[in-house]
Structures are given as structure tokens and as C-alpha cells.
Image (cartoon, rainbow, N blue to C red; front, side, top):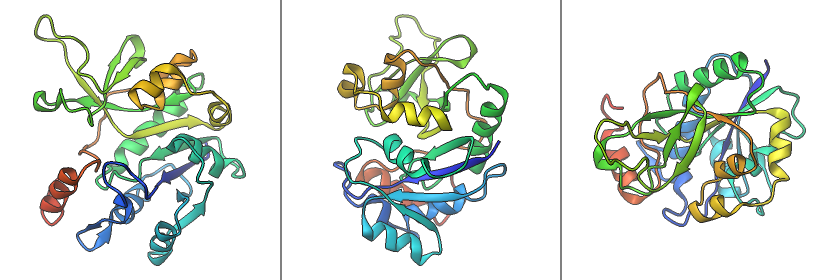
Length: 242
């Protein structure tokens, strides 16, 4: 399979404006994402998709590949769909532009899952969520069923824990898509649950398409959604974590 990695990055985050350009150990956040994603084996091009010239200039400054997109996209997946419409590929890995600690192994795991499950249109990854994060709406939760198929994603702590022992999984900000499914997704209307939760992947489930969400095998660390996330990232970037 010919796989490309696309990193959607926008400036206008409501919780942390300009976060792709926030300094992290002397580099902008988006550069950390790009450099780590580029280390993944089994993929071809890695590029950033943005509608902001400031981000584009930052990417060019470290010799990264960047594509300018429309500013009208409702989410990152639609931005990715615009970028790859003229790229000859079989699949696309979407790495969020606020994941500076993304492990290349996770990208490789998605590539393997895509190659081994040709009838599944969309993929992501999950990880065991620490109890102190269960009530954090910025840590998206996922419930899966047989074959690692997603049943639901939520910012609310799911599943309800009437009895102890049922694991709670967080959702990692990385997706894999079949090339043709991206075209289909970009034409889907917003759905009630995706709008209510502000989670783009719920649009796929509500339209009746499956999402496979295997347990992540590589290292994982929180993405940068808030100032506190950025402060944490800055506190560890010079050491050995994550």
C-alpha cells in the first residue's frame, strides 16, 4: 500500500490559540509532530495541511512539506481530504498537529492494521486511561466491542462503572483512512452526536461505518489541548520522557 501522512494544523484553537507554533524546547509544536511522524516506516510522504500562512512559513523554515487548504473546513478530516484529492495513494494517516510526542510505532501499527483489514474504511488507536483522567473532557474515551470495533466515543467517562473491573480506554489523536473513504467522509453531513460531543469520528459511526480501534503498542503521551498540557510538555521535553 502507498500510505501518506498528513498533519492538519490550524491556528485558531479555542482552548489554546496558535498551539502549532507554541515553542517547545526551541521548536514549534508542529515541527516536533512532523519530525516524529517522518520517522515511521511503511509510509511515503509526510506533509502539513494548514490554512494559516504563519504555520506554513514555520513548516517551510525546517524544510517540511506543507499544503495550503481552505479555511472553511469543519474539522481536520475534511482538511486532510482536500489535501489528498490530488495525491496518488491507497491510504492516509492523519496525525493531529498537537501531538508532539507521537510515537512513530503507532503510525506503523495503523499501517499494519490497514494492510491486514482491507474491508475496514477507518482506523484509530486506544490506550488504558488513568483514573485521574476519566473525568477530563479533553481526554476522549472510547468503548470497543468484538474485533476492536468502536461502539462509541465520548468526552464523558464511559463506560459507566457500576461494578469495578471494566477498563476505561482513552482515544489517541491518530486516524487511518482508505483513500476513497476520505472522499465519502467529506461529503457526509454533520450528525447530532458528532456536533454534541464535538468529535468528528462520531459522524462515521452515526452513518453506519465501522472504525477499528486496536490497543496501542507504542508509547503515548497526551496531546496539547490546553495551557496546562503545554506547561507539562515543556517540563519534560528536555528529559527522557515520554
